[in-house]
Amino acid sequence: MAYAFPPDEPGTTRPSTGPSPRHFELYHEQRARGLLGRVFVTFRHLLGLLFGGGFAFVRYKKSQGEANTLEMLILRFLLLFTWPFLTKELINQPFPIQFRRRLELLGPTYIKLGQILSLREDLLPTSITDELKNLLDRLPAVPFERFKQLIEADLHRPVESIFQYIEPTPLGSASLAQTHRAVLTTQEMVVIKVLKPGVRQTVERDTVLLRLVGQILQLFLARFQPARLVNEFCRYTLREVDLRFEAENAETFAANFQDQPDIRFPYVYREFSSHGVLCMEYFQGLKPEPGTIQTLNQQQKDRMIRLGVSATIQMIFRDGFFHADLHPGNLLIFKNGQVGFIDLGMVGRFDNQTQRRMLYYFYSLVTGNPSDAARYLSSIALVSKRSDIDGFKRALEELYQRWLRSPNFYDFSIARVILESVSLAGRYYIEYPGEIILMVKALVTVEGVGNVLAPASTLKRPLRSTSSASYLSNTTSTGYLRKACCLSPNCSTCSTAVPWPSTTACKPWKAGSNSRSRTR
Image (cartoon, helix red, strand yellow):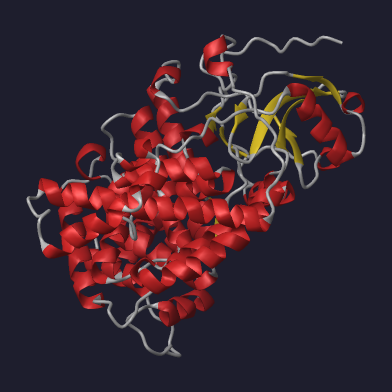
């Protein structure tokens, strides 16, 4: 039976029907290589990247007039022996481009690795992280008939018994999975997300190999902590190739926001989902892009900013469970004033201690206390014998003082100042847990969307009011105050006396009490 989707409003998430935006190359299934074959291919690209980096280094030294030193002459002589075995098109490129292209050639696991590494501005040079942001995110799609076969193989039932209609053209096709719109036999509009064939086996095999590579690189590049980075990546990616985790994430978010109907997460149809198939509610809303928000008035835009900020702050600082792959494509604005979050496969988690320290850091920052903000952020850092924690604190304080003088999106936004804070860490041999970087990405996204809705605005006011509410909810009981004292980075022991809130924190209380007395 044919089915026609209802016409979409301008700017909604349904892509247009022309061949250009909806066209995907065909995905060609290949027989999975054994572990030994994959080892050979991976190390071939790794050696190619190493020698290609050598040629890029020689070109750089030439541009600096330093190509004729003894060390460079020896390097150039050695590289001559590798020239016949290298792809000339690749090695003539700058090193960051070589790195990106090698990851793309290695397939879905390494594309995901590059996307994660693109966030690690605290560890990698900006030239590399900027180039990795160009990694392919629109990849070949599985043919429609094969897509239906994958559903049936995973759910063990014919698609006709579940879906009245499946749209043949994909909504999207990424490195691990692709999505199609569909209609259930009960008339509900849904999105079906299906893992591409062979992806799970490839990822499981590649993560074994990547951990080995990480241990080898750790011997030569210990400063960049490759073993820890690889382990973090493997942990996240192995969860992404089991779609049951994404279903659980969606249900956890919905439970966390059950008392806030204006913030929505897609409902998951568990009876039509499995480890390789995810069936979820279809959201029809506006994407927060310049061309799609012209129908909103200023009041609606301000409401969207407030909802987006409050949702992100709650995820990070109240729940310690947040969307870790947040970008404008994963946010939706509904015509009734609600905000929706989609693509929930990657989440970040904070333990209680990190969660509170991050809250105190963020609160100190948005309320204009740079010394406390520097102290709290330093307390979360991973330090070693080479770390200069005092120098790092001083650099942070100087950065925050500059931001307080110019807090706007174009000159010095709050998300950018937090990102720069984390980026400073590498200079002082300091690192941060991966979750901190994912949190920064979420804040950068929210601020960027806020700027689309209200150009050249500052989110300092909504961020301050939302973080103040979170701060007060964490410090108004005796138990939480004692925990706050224990977790304070400048307290070595926990006092038995309950500490009073800081002067800054008391201001909202004083204002509230004054207003209540006037009301009486």
